[in-house]
Length: 196
Image (cartoon, rainbow, N blue to C red):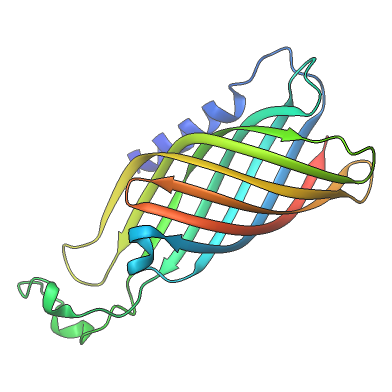
């Protein structure tokens, strides 16, 4: 519970840690899609789900540049593995019968982000973004004593293309890379953005 409250407090701090002089325009966005483990993470985790949500505020006198905060969540099931590598002292060793079907890794966290939208003069809006913050790697298993959760310094960067369907609503598709110690993944997401 303490970890959860700390996470929510960090998220709120990043979302509202913007200059008080920002212009009135604020963008809220939600996106979801596939997450593709990379590096050591890909050796045991399968393709999974990745979702994001955030808020961006225009930076005064810098057209196209925004700053804000983002929260994210991903869930990845695991490949089967040889339980010969698992300590036989586990109370649930015999119950899992040589597979990791119940094992999964959830990642979640919060990032402070910068976003730059290129002005094309039309409805299409290409953009780049990057962020720094907290990434939590939570491993869950039925094997007693092996579940764990670790927090890391995390980062992300990516690019996307938005399409303005009305004055206040856009749809977007993007690719991103997210990383932390022992946890790296690519994401392909689509979503909606709302200009307030």
